[in-house]
Image 1 (spheres, rainbow, N blue to C red):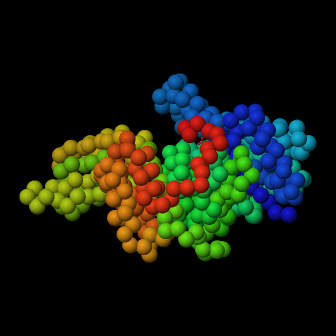
Image 2: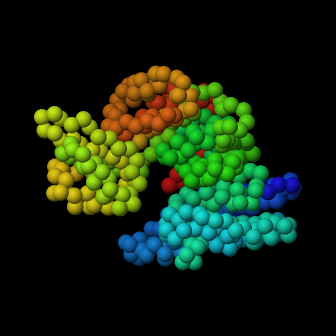
Image 3: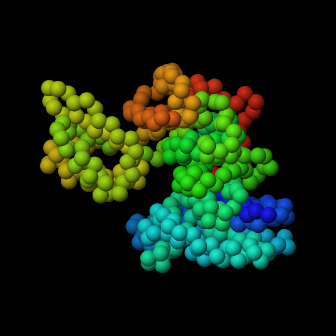
Length: 422
Ligand code: ASP
Ligand code: MG
């Protein structure tokens, strides 16, 4: 008898009916002879609604109190799921992140898990109960305050608990049948993948695919925990995220998917003197803001002027802070001006087969050209090519790329069972 950890997302728990459906699924897993530990997200769009509410009270809520507020969402879910299970005649006990032993650092809103001490969960399952845990939250080792782990981080709670408990699998339940070749909300012809390697999944998650939280994939890889992404609303086999070294080779496809990200902004520092140390000063200043930079491009300097432009992308919510910090450097560095553009989007083509297949870049760019999409920035990794384009063209670019690489499913449409996609 093994331990199965299951995580249910907000759209699977949008209302009482959803809660009951989830409870049935959990009980079925228990009846099949497993010990079950469940991680839940907040119901529907509760986390967004709580955030909006806080903002109506004050534009800058203290991070400690914001975390206290947001963690309430998951507590509502965990108690309701436990009640629904008990109504089916099984014992369930719910636990906050803190009670479940999720110990974090004290960075409110983006806390990192530093230890897991799941004694109370082990006790509950050893007594035959099903343990229900509030995802996305923990308790700071230093301050003992309640923390949150970042948006979408219930996935990470689940994989971290699965690793700490020595579970056989971590199942992530959502409103689609698994990981698709593109967001099925945009590409109706997206295809469900049966298996994805962790390295490809890391690139997808890091480049905007919302199906799995990036840190959960990293955690899974580090602890060799198989992750099975599947739907709450169907019994279908989902997508297995599998470390490369394990099991059979991945599907033979060269490309495994097209990811997109609408959450970034682009800053250009115009007219930077092309001499030693200027880029270092600019990026040292940016580093102090804590902004998480993504693509960085420096143009060749024009010989006649000795000046160059440096562009980079970052999460839109860090844009203003970055601009303010850079403005303080204008005189000392002597650059011309700062440009800010938040109407951009990133489209990424991902596939481990890229390593050994030439011509992928040419085909990608030709598909964009045929769709009338202009490329503003380019970056690559071994298994990914990303472009920054006009934000209004993202959906066209994703569809065109998906078709160009023969990813379209000819046998039917991808199903999105629930959720607002918010
Ligand atoms: N409820 C949290 C959020 O909306 C955590 C999660 O869903 O994973 O970000
Ligand atoms: Mg999620």
